[in-house]
Each structure stands twice: as structure tokens, then as C-alpha cells.
Length: 187
Image 1 (cartoon, rainbow, N blue to C red):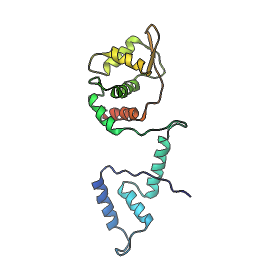
Image 2 (image 1 turned 45 degrees about the horizontal axis):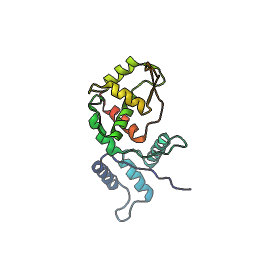
Image 3 (image 1 turned 90 degrees about the vertical axis):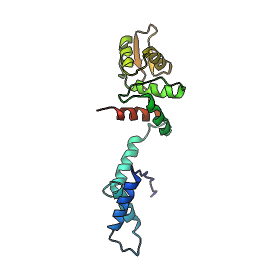
Image 4 (image 1 turned 120 degrees about the vertical axis):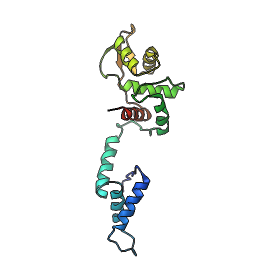
């Protein structure tokens, strides 16, 4: 049976180290012998906030299954440094404060605006204008509307009366930015 790699993450290494020290001090193993592999796994899992290693393993495997990309799609890892940088373009209410000068930043910010448009619905131009006006502070909803269409995130009829959000899967960095901005919003 092949061993499955299970990523482990601790929010605070100092708290984790204290909890692991406590687990080791409470171990029923004599000090002369090192704890067994399974005992260490259970200690690490409990120090990480799980009931035991089996609980940790079940949670990790379920998370991996939920995070699996659709078949045929190559999942690139999210660039969390870029996500962190892009948060400066949004205020505490998730509104775009200023238009990024860098093209790659603009596209990722457009994904955030795209995520807030109602899917699978025809919108009138006035509706789109109001929705975009509420999502930014620099006063140029026409620029945003035009760039959403130019980037293929939204379509419009030739006369500009009807707009639709294009249903696409955001790139992983855009998805991470959408989630991060959403988490920062007041409840």
C-alpha cells in the first residue's frame, strides 16, 4: 500500500511547540525510549488541534477531495504574495479604491468584480453601471464595464443594452483574492 502525502499546517508554531511539549511530557513512555512512530503522529495531530492522527488524516483527505480541480484542468498554485499585494487596492468594504497600473493586477481585480455580478442572468446597462459603481471609489464604471468585456469576463450585445457574466473558472490566484477580499468584509 502506498503512503499518501498529507500536508500539515499550524497557524502558530509557538503554540504548536508548546502543545507538542505538553503531549511529550504527558506521554506514558519512559524517558529512556523514544515514542513510537504512531505515538508521535498522534501527539503531533493532537498538538495541531485534532483528536488523533486518524482524525487529522480524515480531515486532510476530505479537504484534498474538495480541492481537486475538474478533470483535465491543470491546477497552478495560487500566488499568495500577489494576493497580499492586491488587497491594498480594496478598502475594508471590498470596494476597489484605485485602478492598478499593472495589467496583471488589473485583470485579477476584475475577477473580484466579476464574482459579484449575478450569474446566468441578462443585465441591462443601467444595472451593470449601478453594480460597478457600488464596487469602486474612483468614479469610472465605464472603464470597468469595458475592461470586463475586453477580458472576456462579460459579454454585451452590439447595441450595449444587454450584458451577461461569462461563466468561467477563475485562475487560482484570482480565486484566492476573491476569497480573501470576501473574508475581510464585515459580517
